[in-house]
Image 1: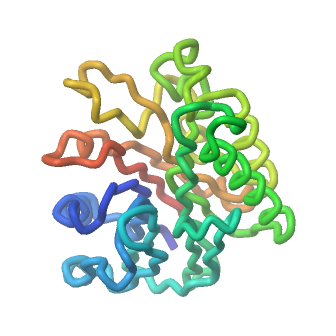
Image 2 (image 1 turned 180 degrees about the vertical axis):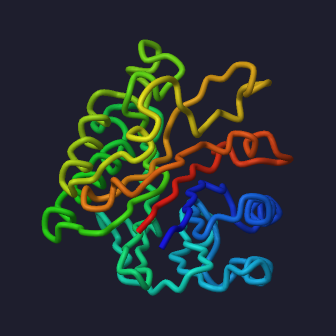
Length: 262
């Protein structure tokens, strides 16, 4: 069984429903994982997705912010949704395909603007969220699993436009990178994207603040596809669909793809 999966922080699924439909029509991933849906689950516009063959949806939503969803052409059943750090945020959902593969969709907190938990509560929540993810995976070691989502950390020097300039900027600070690496190790996860594209700059997010985001190209790789080591070798064809960042009224993230032969 071969399937293609995409992950995309959509920054409001109702506002950007036309962009989701465009991606589904033009790229046709078997599974699309969305983050920052900003919608209660019952108000996600499912009819258009279903008309394109995406008749299965798992969603953990809330009004106005956060929210994750999995749209699938393949049958999928919910197996988990966890409120890490008891924030009351809709940031995780997991589903299992008929072939036994579990897909975790995460939206890790951004962490605010100041990388100091003593003066910025949101930064502390981000680090604690990652710590609880580590405990979660150590407590129940994942097998035949894929983890995707906006993890809000760009771990490698070539995952940001300037390693030196961003060392003290939230999303690329050493303490965040250490927490993300510990989370990856806790579940024996493999960074599929970088296994597939090992060298060179690679970004999935560009700020709205840039007048010409593409020319400036001051990006960061905040979105990730991981797989447990028992299936990571089946992954290939990783790519960032950069063109979507330039669509009309876009998300500031671009979709990230990977294909699995399982």
